Length: 485
Image (cartoon, rainbow, N blue to C red):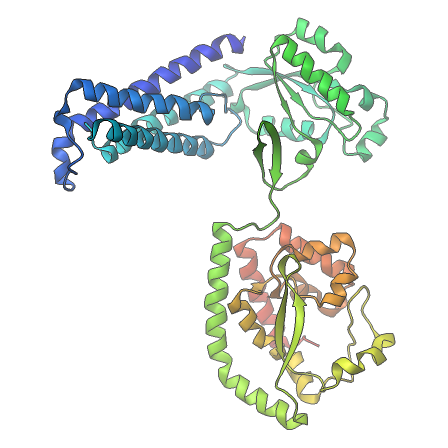
């Protein structure tokens, strides 16, 4: 039923946007004479060129609108998409249509009959305004049970349950679930076996039987769309056959791979020629929030280096008086993505600490690839004091300032530790290492290495600027209490 009216609504929407865009250009043409009040009108804006030039330039802008809007799927159904994303797509289309149309018009005619900035502002105002009104109206109508789309679920993957929960929370999507069909490979498994492979055991809507009944279900019900949520048991040929059956009767379908439903990372569609795919970005890809994090690292790192400069002289003198060795200890550490960098600390051990480490391996108190001794005999008296209050870590502010480290992040391991990581433990290398993290605040030396890595991964998956602020505040408390050793 909905398919019969969607095309009409889409065509009306097309015509409305065409009218509003043409109106915006006409007003920009008519009001160009008042534009000097806002700034000098460029020489290449000539509204006196005549009606034929105006019609040609309006036609070019509308032609580009038709091309760009089609490419951006502007008039497809986006009922389950967020409003910000929809409106952003509209803004991009307006900019490209007006921009390309004005540029080509300028190349053809040598001048524009309208001011492009004024036309752009008016088009954004009119088209965005109409789109907001339309979205709000349709949301209210769908929430009342009208303008709904009848969908059929296929598969018992975890995506089926997650999407149904979304529908319950968002009735304005206007999707009415007819029921669910199960793939044959799913029906061969018991509920317990299906659950262990990530499938849904108990559907929250009518079970319409096996996927072999698809044609009968389509004949009995008015199906607008099929939503495919395969479980780990589903065979590829079953999915392919269902897609062919949908194509045969002209029913649109959406295929959500099981991993996409289980993965919490942001996915975006990509195209390799004509081959579609889903791109999953690794955690903490460069974003505006990460830019803020980096700015904080630079500011705090630089200021911290200035503030600790008197302390460097005092601690440096004490270290020198202890055994005459170097003030700083330099060690290669592993950073983000496995990159290596030189990490600096105030030297808290004897000069021969690295050479005598082999003799102490049997006294290692830590599990996993980490080497730790609570009362390490290599630590000097001054070093023990510095470690108690984490003063030996202060030179790492230089690594923070340089960008090898961050204020907050998993501690940087040495290469020998990384070589002995289990595969899942390498996840802690997905972000920059830091001076402090969850383990430093709540774990310290009282946890196993496995739990330490789990805490680091917890930080990576739940990262936010606010979490960084809390960890830094808690770290100050830990340092003041002197729980570093």
